[in-house]
Length: 306
Image (cartoon, rainbow, N blue to C red; front, side, top):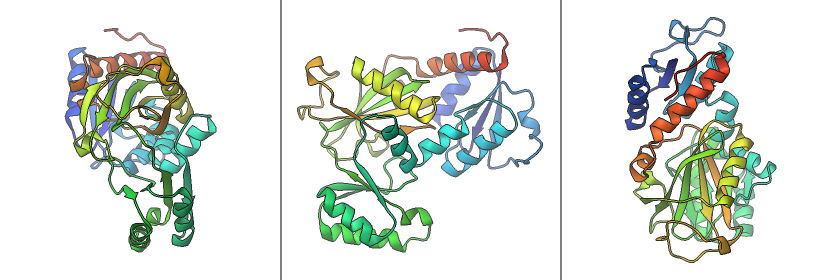
């Protein structure tokens, strides 16, 4: 198959995928979106003959627009522009999860400092203030008291971009020093890892320690439902455990823990290099397996299986 890879920078994740695709004999067309122009009528030359386009854009803005163009050109794109739009915006993400009946942290959205302050006071301290667009834990704040809340709200209100005028306030979830990242393809888990840290943010990008995590049936079901809620695709589903002992050392949960996961986010341009190094699963191999199957279904032609 001929795979188009949309990118603005080739990171380790993209190198792993490129190597896997080329090792299997697939043709790869790299499309640097910083240099490409997109006509609203005619597809760029690099889009000709592609069986599938894989969005690996680093910037959310580019991802949202370029996937929309790819869809308009009639080229199957992973992830779809509709999925990208839901996952890129935390408000839309939360609404999709809640609308599907998936446990997710209580969240309020306000558009003025006063309204946001009322929400924060109702949630109580601590609570969390997040940007509606963003990743890697950037610009997230755990608010421990009223003076901190007033300062952070004032700071956001003075920033220029309209997104900072959307105050996304979320309850603080007491978790056992870790969260769970699951890489899934159309709801089917590929691999999972626990990300542990003494800091309240447990993102790998923030230096969290990682360990392979064995999903139980409850977690698997939540991953599938969360994927369906945002439109499916190649996704990173983030889970938090609630009501468990403060011991992040266990590699798995026991059945007696009961219904105690919450899904706080689904990511559409998911990074997996750390997951690949953490687990025994060949993550890029599993992703390419899935891409081959997607391309075959979309184009109605045979694709050489691994």
